[in-house]
Length: 212
Ligand code: ADP
Ligand code: FDM
Image 1 (tube, helix red, strand yellow):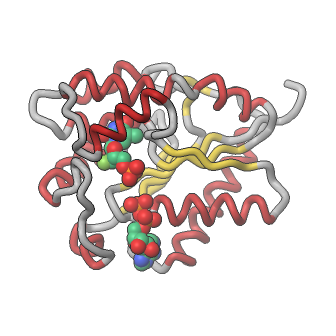
Image 2: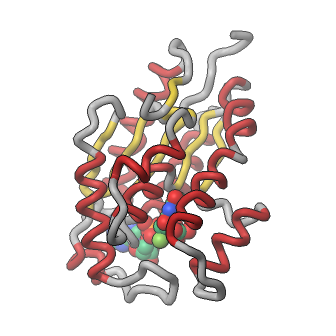
């Protein structure tokens, strides 16, 4: 390797857990400490596939459930060359949602097994760290109403939470559960601590393959 690689760091969690707030803060603090770091989010709504997903989430189009699952996965795969390039160049990536959201959301729909949902994402770049921002539905409710997008109902989000809990039993993934009910600053401190550890560890390790 020409230089030490960057780390792939993912934040997951239910709606309003603070993922976007914390991704931004983490990127800002790592940049301030002089590290090369960039943020990404999934779905990436800017690509052609992302625009199909965006229309679906905004309820401007209907897509068959298997089809949209595969589109979410394709949206990650189309960014894989960029992800690998950045990591190889030594840039750490902070990612707002990844394949775990993909599996949790689709498998919360009737008739979808966790196993089937994981298949299309097998072999994606494996995150060096996945932080799950844990927040109860009651605490999430204090942070405002649900929006208008698809999946933004309390019953569905409860089902999604259960699927995340199942995924977190997989010890092949470096999960860290963060209590997201704390202040923005306290949550950030923990996220920064785990991220710095992951960055230090990842630089000497090859990038893994997810669920392989
Ligand atoms: P997510 O990306 O997980 O949906 P956001 O980062 O968009 O969550 O945060 C959802 C809302 O909750 C925003 O209004 C944000 O300002 C607020 N928020 C985020 N973190 C906290 C926190 N630790 N305590 C209180 N409110 C928070
Ligand atoms: N979502 C997100 C999925 O259903 N599958 C996926 O693979 C991913 C990455 O899309 F409801 C869902 C989760 C959420 C929505 O919302 C994206 P945000 O506000 O852009 O995170």
